[in-house]
Length: 42
Image (cartoon, rainbow, N blue to C red; front, side):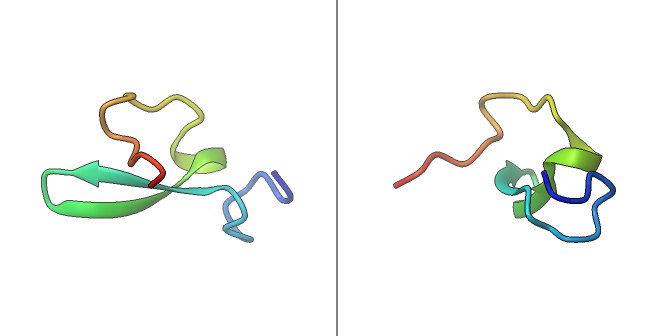
């Protein structure tokens, strides 16, 4: 992670929420996520 404060968005991962897809920052919203919520790579 480049900045570790959420400013650069270099650590963003796509997640699945009840409202639809969402981009989460690992350094601010994580680093632990429910594995079922992390969008798989296609």
